[in-house]
Image: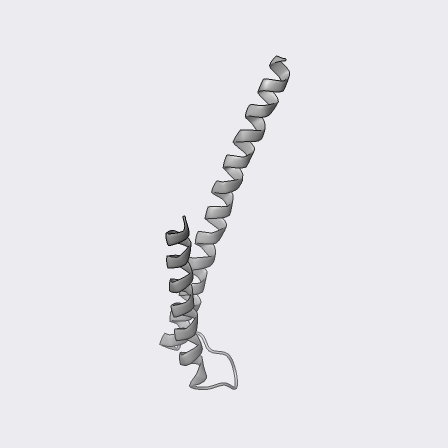
Length: 76
């Protein structure tokens, strides 16, 4: 009986650590997306052969990342 209770506690802890890991992965994705977006806007990063569209693509990345982050916060 003690083994079953201990196993249930371990499963509960694993689920909580999974939530933390998911949050860390999501936050990393947001930071990377913003970094790429701002690099495209600032000219530090460029996709070859598309010229001024790099700036537009950068703004699209930044705006959609901010919108998605707000939606996740509101949903939680």
